[in-house]
Length: 80
Image (cartoon, rainbow, N blue to C red):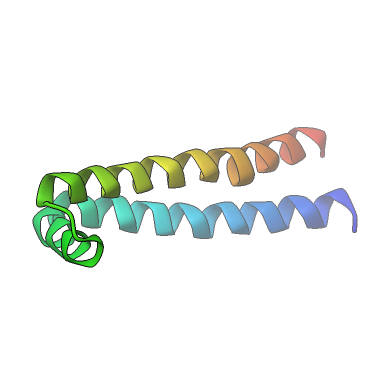
């Protein structure tokens, strides 16, 4: 596997995960009450704790997206 194929792979992976992240963030902004009620019912916690769980999830997803998708793609782009 050469660098060009890896750069293209990480580029598509970054784009797809960016789409998932944006969809999740938009849904958390516009339907946060519904999502926090659902997560509260699933985990047996109140609505405020449900919101904290959701925002923690979105923050962790963003961190993992940057570390495992965006940074390798930028590094491979610089190398090629």
